[in-house]
Length: 235
Image (cartoon, rainbow, N blue to C red; front, side):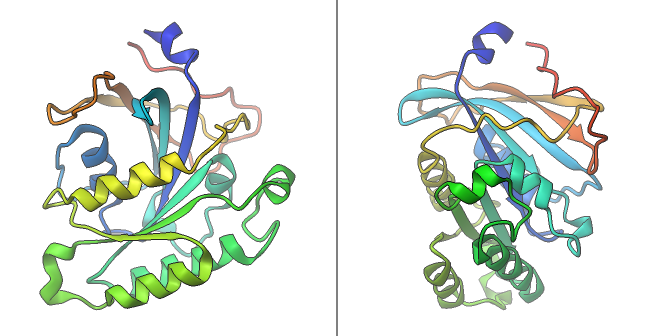
């Protein structure tokens, strides 16, 4: 299994947002069709899973960027990624403001987000914005129109969904973002494995014939440059 996964093309997604917007629940829901409820971590987490993209198996790596340091721009995580998914809660105005700041920085120009020369020379990074917690619409603080307007002005795709309710819009949003990554990046990884946390098992609702298997590992926020690259998870 390890050799088979090593030969697959790789796509890397950074999921960014404030605390308590449902980033971890969203990732686990997409990868496993399971709901984990509220989950908080003080460190970034890396999820690795084999998924089908346009019928082709791909090794997907998703960095769940901890929202505990939302005052610090996640430049390294963005440089590592092939695409970014910004998540906010429709019930939390401040989380939308943070997503707006990150999106503006990403689209400001070469080097604005701490990107590499390769990023600067290439086409803009695929970017999506997702407003979570639409099941709490009675507590809404951010209108749908505001999200649509922000994405329209920055060339990003927009969706609203409820991770708790397992909205189809969640899957459509991530699938679309993945399909926009035309050439998987070969950039050096920026994160090192410190501890194996567990295994992710594909949910029974996955209609694809391609099997899903993977893992989740903790990632130090500022790893020393001499650290080795991420080790492959045990099959």
